[in-house]
Image 1 (cartoon, rainbow, N blue to C red):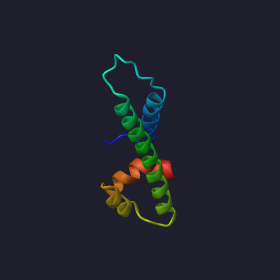
Image 2: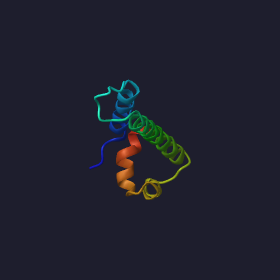
Image 3: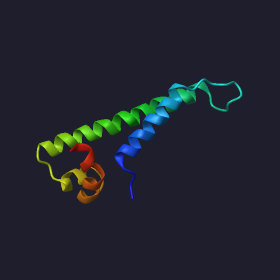
Length: 89
């Protein structure tokens, strides 16, 4: 079963915080470029999840069915309802 959206967002925010606070150590295997790229990707994913929730909230407000929303996000209507209904109410 997919993870709830709030869990995904909390994890994304936690990862973003880790990368924002990361101070490279010369002994680390990661390069500054790798850390910068990872930081940007985590922040983009977090923003995308928030944008998706807002889009779903707007679609529901306009009367779009869970079935249609599910089709657009790549799942069934019931799975979309279970995953997002509490977050967009």
